[in-house]
View 1 (cartoon, rainbow, N blue to C red):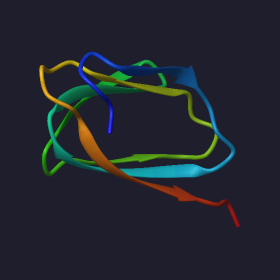
View 2: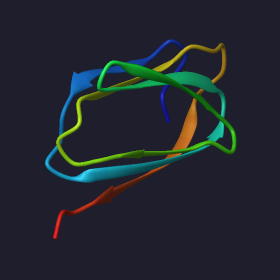
View 3: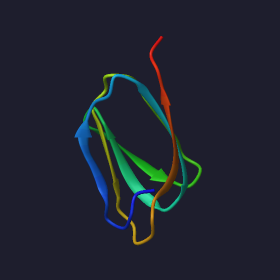
View 4: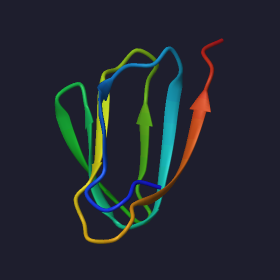
Length: 71
């Protein structure tokens, strides 16, 4: 969950992410490209990609985040 107007600053991880958004509205930035985040959207982030995400709506941005180790 990302609270109202909350955000995670740009960073990179040594593992991949898979985000499934349940409710709310936001933006995910991956390597300087922006993507809408809202219910039903799935976003994949490869290991090592820079990324940030932000709640741009009035309600909490609810998501399931899977962290996938690199084999």
